[in-house]
Image (cartoon, rainbow, N blue to C red; front, side, top):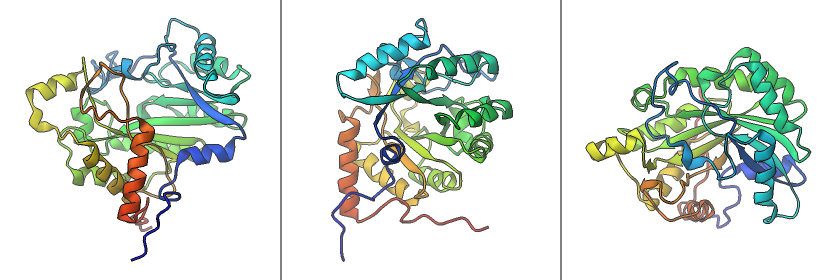
Length: 315
């Protein structure tokens, strides 16, 4: 049997898409605009998602007490020493970044876009926190800037979504993603692989279901148990609910997932990295690029690629 040794073309890498859209190197700068979430403030629930400790993905320069402009300037200073020439996307990452009045949201986004080195925005949000008026605004904005809306799907199982206190069902995610993509807006999604009570069979079913959605890109994250979360307490009391993968087991799972995934959906991330001192388990000691190298090598060994087992839905 002929085995292709090159890793290129094994999966659709979102970095390659960015390189095709921009002539200069592009870097995301996280911005914290001080939002909350509807499942934290009592609108849909309290306590937030059971796995979430927002401190794990907020850089030190990214504080809501600072203005948007200050955070962008400090973010640029943070990255400037690494690369001589680059441009930036303002990444509204913490909590739900469309959870406010549209007038306030416009003011926040447009402050970021006023910076001469910022060429677009990436908005992390929930599928139950967008509406037609806001999506129409994003569509207009995308005519002049790079705009991507990233939705937290996390799971396609309504039982799991209820268990982790998401406050919405999978149908809500489907509707939001379709409404966004229909307006020509780049649309991303987050999925967590290894949530409580989800077997490999259920997880691979997620790949088949999200393959039907008009997604631009996807971020995959292994489940990490993080300190000061409800899920960490659940694990202490009911470890039998959880399957904590070794790095090698997770690599196989990611590749199995990619084999079933629509090859038109770009891969933006395969693992998450919480800061040292927050992670309870698993802690593999791998950087993102180190993990990707391992995945690519294993894909060569398995002679496989994204979409190898993908089947287009019948109309």
